[in-house]
Every structure is written in structure tokens, then in C-alpha cells.
Length: 173
Image 1 (cartoon, rainbow, N blue to C red):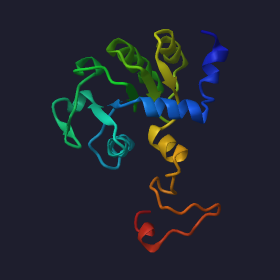
Image 2 (tube, rainbow, N blue to C red; image 1 turned 180 degrees about the vertical axis):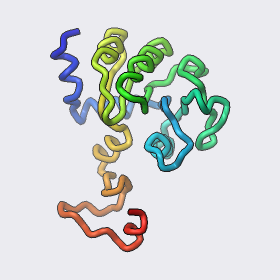
Image 3 (cartoon, one colour; image 1 turned 180 degrees about the horizontal axis):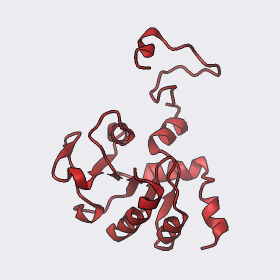
């Protein structure tokens, strides 16, 4: 695959992202955490609440549960292939996870914000997988379907100017 094609992967159209998100029914979250302040936890919870079947994957937590769901050590331990693998690991580690996703029969490899591995993306595409890099499915769902809010939740208020934080919000800062 040419370097130009990999570079173009970052230029995802809204229609492309909608298609990926609408066709995925099960999502394996690699790097899942039970810590509610970690991004992998609240992204996994959000995806579950949106109707996706989420599967936590974390070798350090294998056999335990997150959000009441059993945690698997690796993608090869899953009982069936996930539609999508959401990678909460660094760009270097994403290469190995991508290879596991290919072997596990996943259809999509999604690398989280700040995660980009062009070589892994090329391998995944060569194997017939769809690849998304440097994006967050939670944020894309919120953006594409009008749910985006200042702190990642739907406030049902869309403004173009910055609003002052409320008193209760200041306590979180």
C-alpha cells in the first residue's frame, strides 16, 4: 500500500464514520480500565449505553469484571470475533493489537485519539479490515448525531461562544 493511501486514512468523511459506527454491533475495548476517571472506562460505558455490545480486554484484569462484563486477557480469548476493536494503547502497541484483531476476525480496527500506526493500518487494510486512526468513537458519535457537549455530555444547548462554568462545575476543576 502506498504512503499516500495511509495518509488519506486520516481524512475520514462523516459518511464513512457513520457507516463504520452503524455497522458495528460488538466492540472489543483493548486497554479497558475499571477506573471511572479513565477514558477507556467512560468510552466503554458510553458505547454500551448506546446499544453496542462491549467486550473489555485487559490482560491485568482477565477474569474480573468491568461494568458487570467479563474481562478477557486478549482478543484471541474472545468467544467470537468482535465487529470492531477499539485500541486504548499507544501507537507502538497498536501494531500488535492490530495483528491480534486481524487474527481474531475483526472487521474494524479503531485507534483512539493520539494513536496512529501506519504500518499496522496497512497490514489491517491488506487483510480486508477497515481502519480508523486518531479518533474516538464516543466523540464521533456525539459529533455526528448532535450530542456533543462541552464536557462530553449532551447538555441540549448548542452555543458558539464559551459559557462560564456553573458553580457545581467549578468544584470538578
